[in-house]
Figure 1 (cartoon, one colour):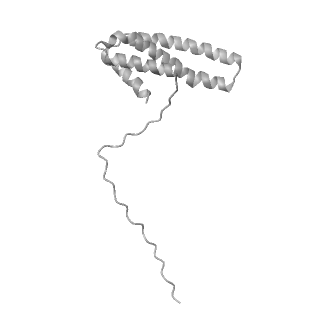
Figure 2: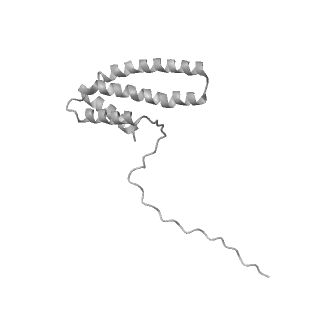
Figure 3: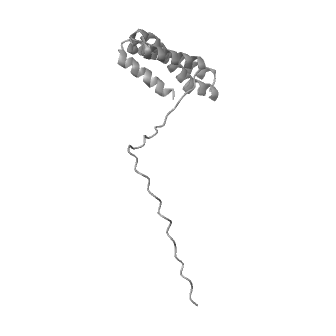
Amino acid sequence: MATPSKRVSKPAAKPRAAAPSKPAKKELPFLRFYHSEALRTKTLAVLTTLEHSPDPTEHRDALAQLVVELNDAGMNYCFMKPLKLAKPGFIVEQSAGLGMAGALQLMGSVVRSIIGRMDKPQLLSVCASIRQLMR
């Protein structure tokens, strides 16, 4: 008795999509932190004021202070808050807090010095970078 032949059928060819005109932008990994609503409001106000000012250099100090506050909020969110949740003990928490305060104070003086010398295009670039981080 003859057995029927078993033919494996090929799947139908899929229609090809048109090649994109530009390569898709690759999503890069990122980290973000949450900060207070008050700091967000202040951030938006400082950025908007500087971006719409005829002379953005008049707002260097406000931008520098904002960057210092954002650094502080970010370090608190990314380091101090998780450390406290880990409950490493009073001495470790106090040591970390003192070390972080010293580091932030040093960073603050560097930030103020650098931003204090920036011209209009540089200040606007910093504003654009901060806005990009807020997305």
